[in-house]
Length: 476
Image 1 (spheres, rainbow, N blue to C red):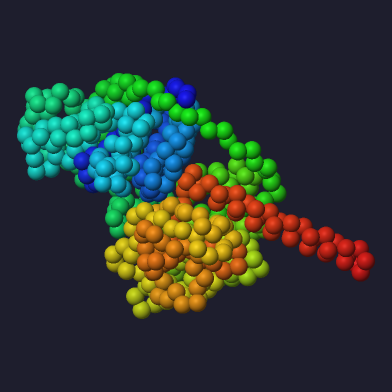
Image 2 (image 1 turned 45 degrees about the vertical axis):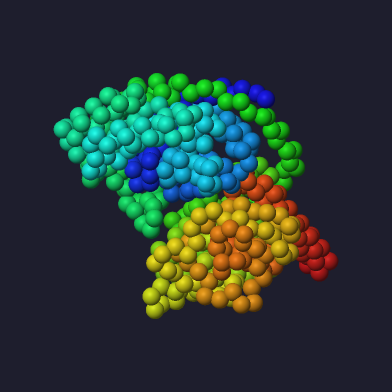
């Protein structure tokens, strides 16, 4: 075992969702970054959207921490490795502090705080309560006694009289500092869609929103008190994992759809491809008219349903992708990527044509079709995973396949929905498309398999080039 020497750190958590965690986390991150500190943000749980705002507030990629998606030892090592060069670390919790995937609370934000020995600042939405806030705080302090709750921030405070009642109740009963009282303010707002916030990339005023939030938060929060709590964090014991020696293949180019429609990627997934030697080639599905010279293609998640007309009109790129799949280009598609590869997506009475590789249309419901963690077993041959492997991931989609008839489905879903409630993972040649989002730290074979397929593609390309050269020499 080794002891880490990590920078000051803290977690913002709450009794429940929609308490203001992301708003306050973004504000504090922006304030600290403006003071010249290197702030490493983390988001607890499987989340791309809140992470996009934390990354924008700090200018540093936000990392995800999830005890379901990745082994505990891997999680701790990942945290210590990615946090060590920061001046301060801020973790945003998810859901309620004690809400976890297991009934005993395993996987909760509280579990994460104890695992990483990180002080918790509890953010409470105080709308329509006064003295009862003390009972709430005391309950959270005493529910799991070793959870390091170190301070409280009160949100949605309606005025000075309300503020005084709240602060007095906590100070008289809870023996814990109140580090901020954030007023009810309509300007402290990020646009929402479905069950969460609009991603930063989609909000054209995002930078102004963060600046406004930081300005208001700074007037009503005790930054020195917060920094003092962050500095009180203990060292973490961890087991050093030796990184696998990987033969780098610098010739390999992996295309990545990255734009307003497709931008749900964990940094670790892209880094895993690079660490195996890939050069990432970013492609804008709305603008780029042709597929560049690549040996593999990764189409991640996002909200293509917002850009169906623009996607459909870019037929050149779609036809290139479809042709490349027919010619056995390795393609890995998650959720939105699956939609892009389908026959078409219906919106109202209109069907927008997509790439047509998957012979099924996509419908969209008003409520989530699949939402939460997913666990599946590989039951059929496919290019990316060996039969018998267990895959953990998550899904969040309003879309569904109108038919799965004739599809080669490689995953049996043990937990979650997938494409039809029992199966997921559509396979065609070297294409794998599913509603399951994986995290490379939990599914460590994924990047290696992807690069192995891409290397075969590169070798085919070299053989073709050599044959072409030979013909030119002899028949030129």
